[in-house]
Structure formats: C-alpha cells, structure tokens
Length: 304
Image (cartoon, rainbow, N blue to C red; front, side, top):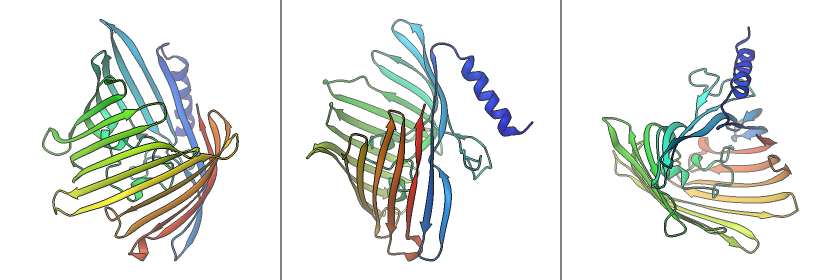
C-alpha cells in the first residue's frame, strides 16, 4: 500500500478512537509563490508549516491535570515536511506535563520562551517573510524542561526553560516575562547560550489609530566571537473591510544578514473564522547581493 495512503488511514483511525479529553487539530496553509533573486525567477507551490496534532489533559486529582501534545508538520505539496531527512513528518511542539494552581511544568520538544514572546507581533509568521530570516532566537528545541507561572498581578505571567544542548540539562536557558490585557501586550525575553547566542528582546503591541502597532527590539551576542548586533521589527495591521485585514511589517538587523532589511506587506481576506485567503509581497535586502530576494505569494489557510 502507498505509504501516504497508509499514513492518512492511520491518522483517521486514531482521530476517531481518541478519548474524550483529546482534541485532534491542524492547519493547512498553501501558497503559490514567485521568488526573484536578481539572477533567476522561480514559481512554486509552498506549504506554510502545515500541521496536524493531538492535545489534551487528564484529571490527576488534587486539582492537578496531566497535559500532553503531539504536533507534527506535514507538507501537502511534496509530502516531505522534513526535507533534510526525507521524512513525511517533522516534529513540532511535542511534550507531556502537569498543570495546577502553582503553574505548568512541561517536558519534551517546545518553542523556547524567547521565541514565544513574539506572540502576534510577527504578522507573517510561518510564511516566507517570517522574522526568522533576519533575527536569531526563533528556536524550537528538544530536551527542554519548561515552567510557566499562573497569571499574577492580574496581568503578568512568566516562562522559564532549561535546555540541553551540549553537556547537560541547563547549559542553555530561555526566559520571558509577559504583560497582557485585552488590547495591550508587553514582554521582556532573554536567551542564555541558546544555539550559540546570548540575546534579549523587548516587545510591545498596542492599539494605534484603529490599528494594531507592534514593536520589537532585539540584541544578540555570539558566544564564541563576542560579536554583538541589534535588530528591530515594526508591524502594523488594520481591518479595512468587514473581512479584510491589511498588514505591513518592517524588520532591520545585522544579526543574520549584513545590513539586512525585510519589508513585507499583505492582505488577508477572511472566508470564515477558520479559513482565509492570503496575499503578500516581501523584499529581503542585504549588503551581500547574493542574499537578496523578493517573493510574491497568494494562497489559502485553513484551521481545524
């Protein structure tokens, strides 16, 4: 039997036989894109971090819950989500933990607290214009132990990660402190020796003239060389029709690219609460011409 067909039947079987506490979920995002790198122009269909997953919790008594999640990236375009290893599935946030009144403890593979601090400031997350093109710190790491506090002081929460990268658990760490209300978000995040960098970022998202304005400032220092660079992201989104959202994002940094600059604008047309049409254009420039490119994309995103 074809492996892809067998895989689909397996997913269907388990989704139909899951306990009541478990949720099957996913996202399918595909865009038709044209990339121009000043030398060649190429058009392709691209999967934008399409994924499936299972998550849930089980009552453990004493006001405690066991939590779990298994999430994997899939590629409906070419069937190889993990191209480097030729695999159909690529692991995303997959963990087990325990949740109670004192907070949540989790172990496994997970986005770092530093990465998660971006919240919705990166308006083009998962697309070709993701801020990971220009900033360090967008890491999802295995062998991670995390703890998230309950909300304190009405609007504050904190997350701390211990990560094994070389010698042992805790040789790298990640931390974030968040402040969140119904319309204001602020955060401070730190990485210590994560993927070879010490970094910090300050983030703010506020209402601005009927729009949402997001700001991020980041400093990253390479552990081995001591080289230190800065970067920023500014994003703006505004609803222009009942179902349409215009988005603009500017990012500039020398952290990953010399004189790196990324300018992106786009439009989302909501078809329902879980489906939308995506249109975007992004331009990535650098002092190194071979790194420059621009991409135009249009496609769909469906969540379930």
